[in-house]
Length: 422
Image (cartoon, rainbow, N blue to C red; front, side, top):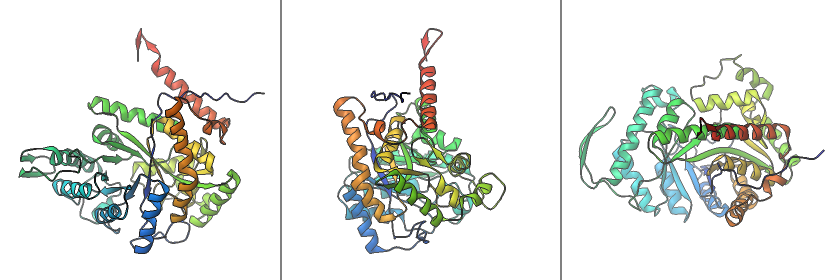
């Protein structure tokens, strides 16, 4: 019996580039060492961490936002001065910074880093967290506010004459011209989420759209199609797609899985205890974020997806640590799984580990180069290389089923309808 035939043709949906994002570590705390990190700031560790990101070849680092965390603007400015190439991403909630002030801060950061600033807007998915800083708006209005916020950011960076504005959320007179960015062009704006509001606002107005549920390749492909459809209706270019994973890697698949089960055991309670929670038999966790809810649903429905996607950490922790979908396997297996996401259309990949600093070094030495070699091969030859064919997962029944379902869906979408191509 012969195995499946690997098609070297690059999928039509594939992105032609890939860039890597990490999350800035302020201290060594993580899910596996019994310390979530919290608000503590270890300056010596932080310096080592951002230097390691740059040396490993990461393109961006996200400076998260929370009411009890270090200020993302200040950390981003520090990161920009401690590195030469790494691009700091400021996580920002529209609830606590007036848009014209945010535009001024971001343009200043962009000037100081010579064009490296990016902003990730968080509308807010947990009411209790929003209220800690005085935001009592319901979720739908938070996204409407974000939409208005984006318009004012871009106008503040590009208007050449003073302008006034009176909207639903913001009002001012005779602002501008505002402080310019390094290039004179708007700073890239990212939005993420899985709710209908997130899709509508993010796809219509953002430069990047972020998926953080860590779902199957087929689901990511469908979500990308949805994003592109909304962008087209809004007359906007397709946003770049950003996916998020937590790789657990080793020299062999077997060693990686040993590490993964050890991490799950150390990260929280047994998976069986949380399975009941995910299936709705306990009310210990209130899910408000659509992304977090979908992540839990995926974990409850199935433990593994595609080539290397694993929901074991989510099952063990209840998803308390945010985006926790793992990619488990050898360096080659996980690199191939990342390229599978690139083939679906993702061009920005966020990866962070559970051994905070050690994983950055490991990814830089063994994981990022494999992905970049594949992308370079494609650019040079116009064909896929052997990475995905030779790595584990190719030929796995569930992997093949997802691939074939996606292929049939693509063929159906492209089929003539009444003599006209869809």
